[in-house]
Length: 80
View 1 (tube, rainbow, N blue to C red):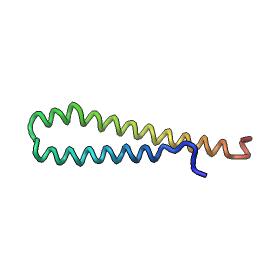
View 2: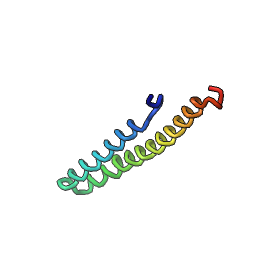
View 3: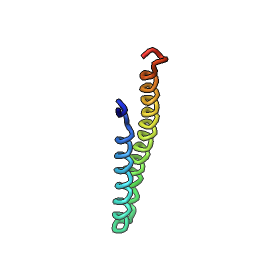
View 4: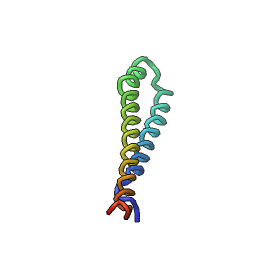
């Protein structure tokens, strides 16, 4: 039986999306490399990437907590 709450698939999709954004931005920067592109990256992309990484850290910690709770609840010695 699979886990009741497994956030790893969602975290993997989010990581893949961030990687894709990085790839696309690198391609865009080959054509658009001026002060406006740097400002766009600084004002929008860098904060977004930072927020996504923070969210991924939180998702991974929550996934660990949920996995432990599931183990605790399925352990017959714990009265479940």
